[in-house]
Amino acid sequence: MSASSESKSAALAARLADHAPRTWQRMLSGRRLNLLDPSPLDIEIEDIALGLARNTRWNGQTQGAHAWSVAQHSDLVVDIVRRLSPKASADVLMAAKLHDASEYVTHDLITPLKAVVGDVFAEVEARLLQAIRLRFGLTATLPKSTQTLIKSADKIAAATEAVQLAGFSEQEARSVLGFREKPLSDVKLTPVPVADAEKAFLDGFRTLEAAMTLQNR
Image 1 (tube, helix red, strand yellow):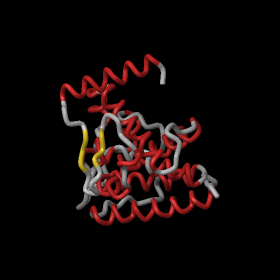
Image 2 (cartoon, one colour; image 1 turned 135 degrees about the horizontal axis):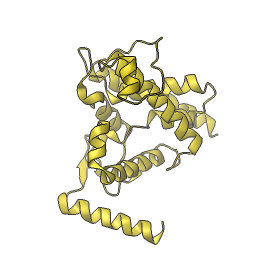
Image 3 (tube, rainbow, N blue to C red; image 1 turned 180 degrees about the horizontal axis):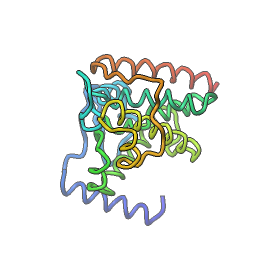
């Protein structure tokens, strides 16, 4: 890390400490995760699965008896990555699975609110994602090609959610939300109870974890 980066990190830590002297959160696993300096050792997939299953997309403004969770969104993105790149490796699929994993702590801030919150939130989110990736056998920073693939899948997922669940027309998804990607027309998004979303997320993670182990032998 350069002297300039270290200086910026120290300044960020000081700013946040002024507002929140306690910068760690206790998880149900018993781990204490420091938001300013997250350690991979304090990250457990069970905590992530629970948090993402209880965390809503679109600020909860979606159709259905249950919320569309970040856990379900994450699984949808994995499915779309498989469509876009049928030969995607297990580590790429795992990166897709965990692309929003920091939100088990930060929650899913909608785009307009992220613009208001600004750089501090982005820095905290980036640090959490790096720690999460390292915890589960990925590189802290993803290759550019992987980032691009996951971003494309993420946008397709979001466009599909916008039309099927959040009340936008396809035209509004383009003109208001700025999506160039077409929503999927051959899948039906069905929000499920928290426990079901949590289990599906964990089951998918375990499958990818095993695939990564085989891949890296």
